[in-house]
Image (cartoon, rainbow, N blue to C red; front, side, top):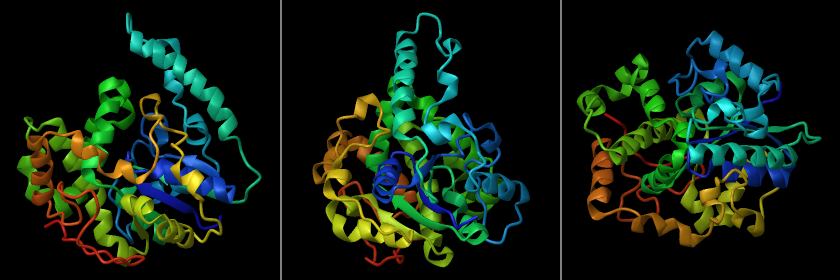
Length: 335
């Protein structure tokens, strides 16, 4: 088994966009979110798991070996289609939007069977949004080359909320992911203990909960990037300074080709219908600032302050307080 190459990050951080652009220009096969606990049942016990370098995890190692060896057979991981949405049983009585989604899934299946058919390639690019807390372990255990993508928390939240409101919430599993994080004893003891009362506050708003989720999924891997040997890339830098930062991705993954402007600015092939017209240009970077009220922005900032996040603020769409280097970024630790 060759060393796997991985794109990781939170959902709605641009990981699919990067996956498709890098895979297309380098003629790579892709494996899409093999840790999805609903559509890959064997992944349920490993999704969102916190694992440190040196941890003995034989069951996880066996599962990830199956993934990296190409032995995982999944309509989802190969063609990005949820099989549970291809049955009439997925439509609740008198649910028009579920019926429309049912038809949409079959249209998506036809498109994806063409777009993601197996290529004549010896390399595969893997994409994860539920492996953020085991990246060092993956790098150590499989000699994986990893790029971790960060995007402004307010932009991520603004991108997730519309999907949840139109019924896509089941895809992203806010409640499920938070449950997995909060019930991971090692993660809680290591990082989250000071926030016990906050994390169990049943009055938390959706925006506050999504802000907390972003902090857990991003700050822990950011802290360890330098010591665990994976590359940090900011979504905003890929748009603002594409020549430099797309080159950093291909270099970190030991690939040859860098996506050109046309490929970079095209919408993600996996984008839902509600976002299919979105393009990846500089105008998108500050769009979220008009999505939230001042009170909501303050709510996001309060959570970032509680978690000692100093790489983003709600006043600035660009990352701040960091060292522009291939792997070294400053960040306050969660304490």
